Image (cartoon, rainbow, N blue to C red; front, side, top):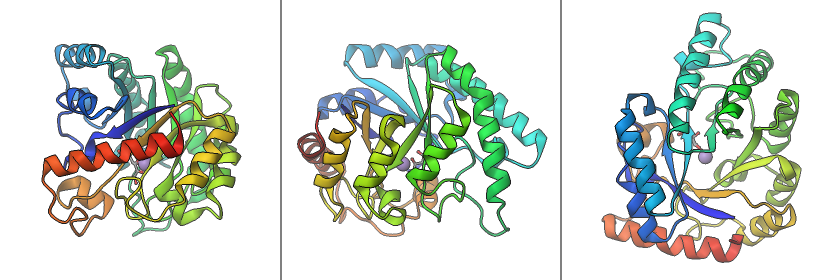
Length: 289
Ligand SMILES: O=C(CO)[C@@H](O)[C@H](O)[C@H](O)CO
Ligand SMILES: [Mn+2]
């Protein structure tokens, strides 16, 4: 098991440059830095080469996360939007591969966060999502990349809310590099049992996000970390565990995640770093790795 952190912990925008975080998280003791792929197509090849080199020098693995926009939605009823989504993913995956990234996770099968001001078509979106992911899976596989389909809570997406729905979706896609991704924050809202949800995903679990009930770093809230760790051990999970804390207000990240209060009690960067370091020690102990 490898442990990481999403760089958005420290940032307000998905467009923030992620290069400087490679060395920072290495110093904090992490194995992985997860970066937002939303704007990777604006990076030059030279920039990507430098970041890849920094990761190699610091013994850090990069993983990617993404919440596709409505205009790049692989499950849209509009064929032109689906086409734009496919082209966007092909370009994004090509650039992601330049960083030696082997895993991209998020609502790849849909868009995020969902606009609920209009009625949603869960059945149609799911069917088009299966087809859309099926249509980019081989392209990703040829680059050595796993597509990890994130199960989200009802307020952020309607297509997949439980591990069982995630497993059924991934089984329907039927490609070896398409996996289920779970996130403890979302599980806490939707699942009857953390342990059962993890066991339901079993060998299909490809990526795992951690965060407390209020998205503080693991160890500062009330989630049943021992139960979560026992279930991960039971299924012999050896993949990435990436903490995804969101504790600061502001910017697109603050508003997409609905952070309307400072959950750090005014912590400065050094104190936030210390929280991350402590949570990493807690996570390694309780979850393994
Ligand atoms: O859990 C979440 C959002 O609640 C994230 O994983 C998100 O989908 C994506 O990473 C955005 O970059
Ligand atoms: Mn997540």
